View 1 (spheres, one colour):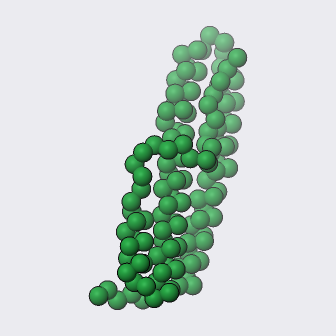
View 2 (cartoon, rainbow, N blue to C red):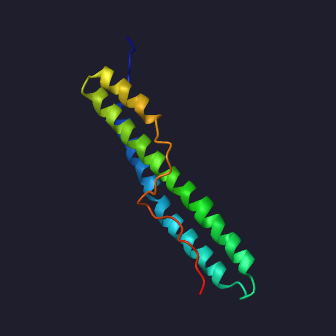
View 3 (tube, rainbow, N blue to C red):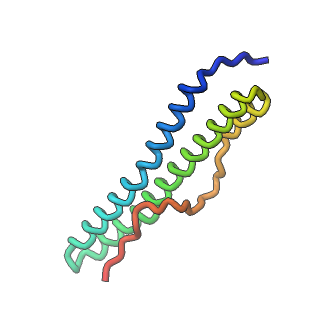
Length: 123
């Protein structure tokens, strides 16, 4: 049987600090989206190819990737907090199962409710 010696207070503090850092990603994503929209608006009218490429970078690359990072981070934080809670309650079997689940992330691309950079449109 595994022997665990976890400082629950320090671990809880670390989980909360990490969750705060993940929450801070959203304003950065929104700022990045606005900056890209401004860049698109500054393009000359005959730069349709550049605009399309910029749009593809945002829609096909940045947004799904950013949403996946936030989603996975939230899953890991939740599972770690759950494992710590189980540990604190003395149930090492449940703690071990929760730790294992922290590494399991749904591999399907899911539109997270976190937003991310907006799709760049131009009139």
